[in-house]
Amino acid sequence: MSAETRAPAGEAPPGDVFPGEAPAGWPAALGTADAWTDDAVLNGRLRLLQPRRGHRFGHDAVLLAAATPGRAGEHAVDLGAGVGAAGLLLAARVPGLRASLVEIEPALAVAATENARRNGLGDRVDAVALDVEAASDVFAAAGLAPGGADRVLTNPPFNDHRRLSASPDPERRRAHVAAADLTARWIAVAARLLRPGGTLTLIHPADRLGDLLAQLDRGFGAIAVLPIHGKPERPAIRVLVRAEKGGRAPLALWPGLVLTDAAGLPSAEAEAVLRGGATLPLAAS
Image (cartoon, rainbow, N blue to C red; front, side, top):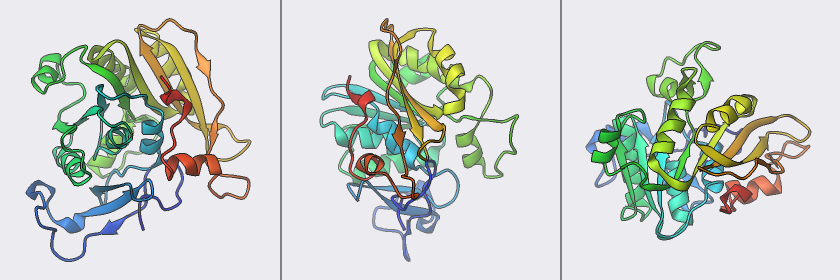
């Protein structure tokens, strides 16, 4: 089974477990190979290592990458990158784009580095074990100076810690459960990293869109929103949002993407993005 197995938006099901001993060159920091899976993304265009247990990337990462603009020569920063899925998908789509993957968990940052290497992207993609909320000088020491990024993309933790029981798994808990103002703080970090006119792209729960727009109102404009619906004629479950640092254009609301049809099968539009690598309208910038 791979990350492309039919599943709701969110995390991927377990992928291919490494048989027997670790492959040659296996990074010691990842521990034993049987704690990781090797997953195909976009019909095998990329293969990504990710933990067998804990937080696992899924459709959200693919949608985020498909909604992020990029051009050759630009620098993109993926905040809270995990094993690097979204940033690597963006780099694979845009030849000549450089990407930095920021991830607080050291083992996941090592996996992101390994994923870049094994997909032939190691010369353009680097990963750094760094807290997104680290001080500006810490970011600068890692090569991420203020105003140096053209694009920032992120899928910040969004489950309110006051509403639900946290997972006993620390990596899953860190990836999914957020303090009330965490998204606002990550937006502030993105604003610091971006050059004027640079763009921030996020994926977020649809029922938090009002809060998100209010948080983006400080420093961002030209906001575009694309709803993601799990089923036809049902409320959106996610929103993709692109905002421009210092932008002044009015908000644009795009037609939504529906993931499954009335029979519960993947829609042709969703398949084009999640398996075929098609981009979404927000990427046209």
